[in-house]
Structure formats: C-alpha cells, structure tokens
Length: 82
Image 1 (spheres, rainbow, N blue to C red):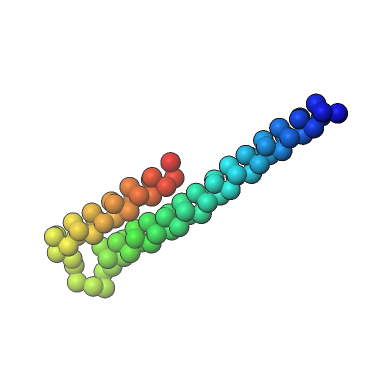
Image 2: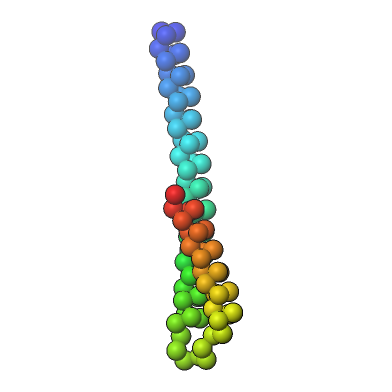
C-alpha cells in the first residue's frame, strides 16, 4: 500500500511539473504572437511608405531610414520564430 502511495505522489509531482512547463510555454507563445504581430505591422507600414505611388517619392535618405526600420523589424520577426 505504501509503495502505491509513493508511486502516486511521484506521478502527481511529474504531472504538476508538466502542467507548469505547458503554462510557461503558453506564455511564451502569447508573447511571441504579440511580437510577430508588431513586426508585421512595422514591415507593412514601411512597405506602404516606399511603395505608395500617390505620395511624392521619398528622398534617398528617407528611404534608407525606412529600409533600416524594416530590416530591424524583419530581424525581430526572425528572433520570434526561432
């Protein structure tokens, strides 16, 4: 009887540890989803700035700034999906 109780306690501890791990992974997935969404929004905003024919052409200096911002957003996006 005592062996069964010990086994049951060990299994309960393993279950608790598994649930905790799932909780931690779930939090990270939520954090990553927010980061991915923000990076995608930044990339979309940059593409609209550069590709919008309705506005005056951006100066080369401004294009570099937009491309730098977009490149940073892509790098952040890649970090989230690793």
